[in-house]
Image (cartoon, rainbow, N blue to C red; front, side, top):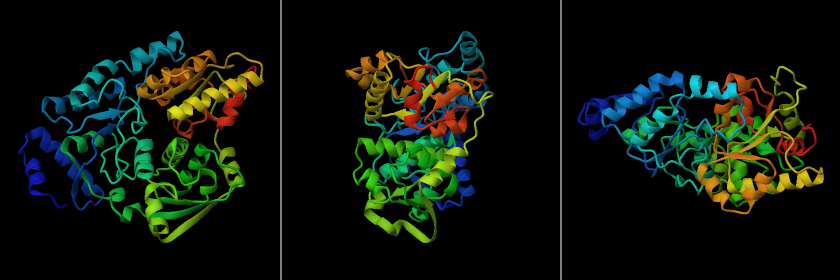
Amino acid sequence: MYLTDEQQAILDGSKGETMAKVMKTLVMYGDTFHADKLVPVSSQYNHLVTSFGLKMMGPVFDLMQQLIDGGAISQQKFSVDPRPLDKNVPANFLQNFVFNNFMYSRQESYEKQLQQLGLMDEDAFTCTCYMDEVGNTPKMGDILSWAESSAVVYANSVLGARCNRNSGIMDIMGSIAGFVPHFGLLTDEGRKATWIVQVATTKKPEAQLLGSAIGMKVMEEVPFITGMEKWLGTELNDENRAYLKDFGAATASNGAVGLFHMENLTPEAKVQGAGLVAEGARVYVIDDTELERVKKNYPVVWKNPAAKPKLCFVGCPHLSMEQLIRWTEDVEAGLKKNGLKQVSIPTVFTTAPAVKKAFDKTEYAKRLADTGVVLSYICPLMYMNNPLCGKMPVITCSNKLRTYSTARYYTEQEILGIITTEGGK
């Protein structure tokens, strides 16, 4: 790997032993993936995936303290993934005991470390840091050092930034050094599509379901998606950004997609069109039958598959303002149709703290609360990591949450029907 004089000097210890170790880590990481050089991180802010003070993560906290003590502080302010706990989210005494004593007992002390390292502010805990309300929105062409998979695929695809699917901790290393290895999705060649996905459905496909099908098919490769213009148009408006957020998260969690191109919609596809497709790209056709096949093959891991749901999560990744308003109206309409005042099972919508603050200033906040839905900043995945919560029959319209937990997947319309129907069925 080629290093500039500045980079070599840091590796040789010009900025101290701790910074030398950071640089060595990045060089070893780059060598693993045959990077040719290190390139500057150019985004205004970084984003870290490791947000939770999980007791078993002692080595991470020790590492963070070494960085702080060695003066190896992030060159960028950063946001971080959601907090794992919220007292407003339903949990019984034993579940809370496990949360606070056996799982996230280091949360408070870890957040102090994050503040010392360069946390943006107290509201910067979300997996959707790129939303306008949060303020960490990279520009097209920015080089990032991120690890959160749903944020990486969104930044690459919807914003046109450049970032590899890094592992946790590598994100802070790149931010501290100000450089990341040049390979994969940072290169023009690495951003070319090796799959052409032809969407031939008779109705607008569910974002989470379409993303799941594509992710499981192409895995870590780059798809060029056609046939969506009749459903989404050609404008990246709020509704389409929310759709691509959920779609991308499903491709990244059900597969390992770090970048997708959608014909006539995503920025690089608009500029380069079919020029983004690599020679010899394979073809995958998705119709109604294929989506139904994918959905039917999801495993149900509940102890009793016929159990009544005890909890519902909507918002993994976190919901946008547009989605919160739409969901509020849909829940109200569903309850009215079925003669109910409030949702029939405990339901939690999750969103970024900054989005929640903005939403709370609107008329919709009280309207949503009146339906019985809890609005939280929590990470549903971290909630479900509690073994006592994992045993519960939880439902969701998130394919990411389904993949990483015992939650059972339903489409948005199915979820809406369940929570606004007497008996929650």
